[in-house]
Length: 346
Image (cartoon, rainbow, N blue to C red; front, side, top):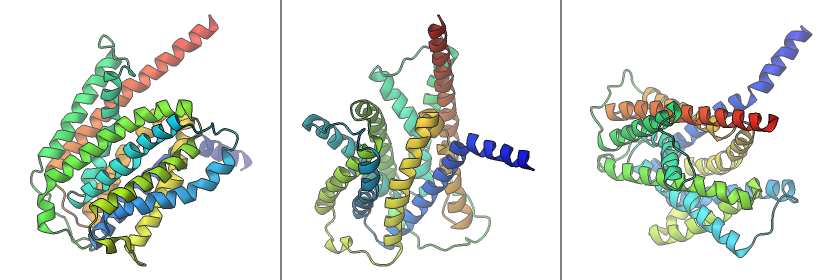
């Protein structure tokens, strides 16, 4: 009995990152469904982003201050300007476009398009010479094929809706639908989603460079939330003409803000940092398609939302391309590690 208990504890320890990443994707899936309900209720996406990251900054500050007191480097003016640009790319500009696109599309499409971020990041990294591409190697060919297939899937989801998939039964939960005029503006929402994925990809590359000069991850995340929420507040004052949009009551708007600020921008960010440190970015990215499938399942089978054939075909192509790309990347990392070990022995 004691041996079985010890074996179970070892399995839990070994698969702890895997279980945490599954919970992360479940958390993201809930995020998209609850924020869409909040936006349908009338909350402004711009106000939501501002409140969400203000709350996240308040939540992360004590952890960053006490846990990284000795690891936090001095903040220079140049470093602050770098954080300012990071906040623009990773918080205010990108996330405002990302959530605004939910008004014109649906959670299934938005989450599926997030799977193109590793592909776009890879393309930008190759252009900027951060990534080496060897077409004489099967791993290099896999990365190119994965990139092309993933981009083809993104184009299918953006430009082709196709026929509506018929619901098999009545929705278990009824949510107020969007107006017909908004549903027809699919292209606008698609362009907003694609633009947010591109800026997110640039942000990942820039973030890696900034972390070398500012290795305090929690402090950097807190700074980005503070600066990003301030940037978003300025943008919201300009873009949101209805001043009453800043007022939220005890309803879905408040709960979506609390969930997005504390659970997603706070707890999930800490889990991602831990898993990234233990297993690396390739491991973390491989779980993204799980969120796509969870959101599609709940939106279609539980909420009865419309699901288009183009979204299904495009999402499958994106996922196949993503795993081809990640396979090429992971095999390359294994090869590099083996080479480094051999050089160390020599």
